[in-house]
Image (cartoon, rainbow, N blue to C red; front, side, top):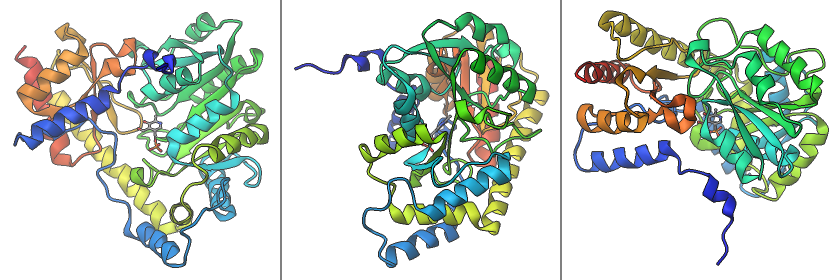
Amino acid sequence: MNLNTQFELIRQSATVAMADRILALKAGGRNIIGLQVGDPDYGTHPAIAEAALKAIQSGLTHYGPSRGYPDLREAIAAKLKRDENVIYDPASEILVTHGGIHAYYTAMQSILNPGDDVLIPDPSWATHSNMAIMLRGNVIRVPAPAENNFIPHFESWEKALTPKTRIIVLNYPSNPTGAYPTRDYLQKLQGFAKAHNLWIVSDEVYGSLYYGGKPTCAAAFEGAKERTILVNSLSKSYAMTGWRVGFLAAPASVIDNALKAGQNSITCVAPFIQKAAAFALTDPEIQQVTARMRAGYAHRRESVLRIARELESDKVLVTPPQGAFYFFLDLRPLKMTSLDICERILDEAGVGLVPGSAFGTQGEGFVRMCIAASDEDVENGFRKIVEWAERR
Ligand SMILES: Cc1ncc(COP(=O)(O)O)c(C=O)c1O
């Protein structure tokens, strides 16, 4: 029987493969420090769960509006105004989605035609290119080298441009590097997109997790809104990964298409989840909780940097992440593949990581270490990685 040949171009997620291996080791009684999964170790705040329960008890257990409840769309528009100073019309420019991944899916479904060239930095979260490939786009990777703090040299965008280029995909703060560019850089990139009539799809799911100056929203420039599509979710910022709720903010013409993509793939996000999301986005106490989680990640980030200074390894090179909750550790001095490194660190030091090559060829020789784990696990895990590398 015929299968969709597009899937031959997509590799199985290395993150999932590592997670399976770790589960197997744990089942066999091994003590593993899991720093591989990008899922907050904080629980969802009980008041958010209560809002969902109340909605269930009040009978919101049937289909809901595909676009999202008006109160949730208003809460999203208010959040975008409050945090990013961008104005979106909740009636026509916002769609509630099944997490950030589905926001990205509906965005790409809405604008991508088969054979379009899509520019995506390397390294980046694998779904960005996999989704474009699933939709029969042609992905061109734009190097974002460690030597340039994981931001593409501007000339690299120009070099990658072809007559078929239609879309730039950004993700800042970045998974896996935590990097984000300056406001000036983004402004220049918007100018580039305008000059070449390109969409900018900006995945900002880590937008509220930053450790220095606030990253700039890609749409926060004069005239940028008409060519920019914002992907976001409550997963990381509100510790709600399992709730599967996110949103898309885009020009009404894009939302019209995205709504059709949503209606014909998921119908709607569960109504009681939507009610919980509206509560999370608007309740003042919950915003404090989010700020406290960010402070927790900042503390762990500092611990890793302190241990790095103390151990002075020339085998594990550390670029301080500006945002998100990952370190993209440079182990290129070991001259091993990142898959080998991860497998051996797992077997010999008992620490679960993700190979940098899962994020693109620029990630070869790197590993992604997630700090969304307990302080103790982050500190012990990082020490074990360095000690393992020093023994090579
Ligand atoms: C860059 C990036 N975008 C989107 C997502 C998906 O988020 P969600 O759980 O909201 O679908 C992830 C999850 O790891 C991510 O790293």
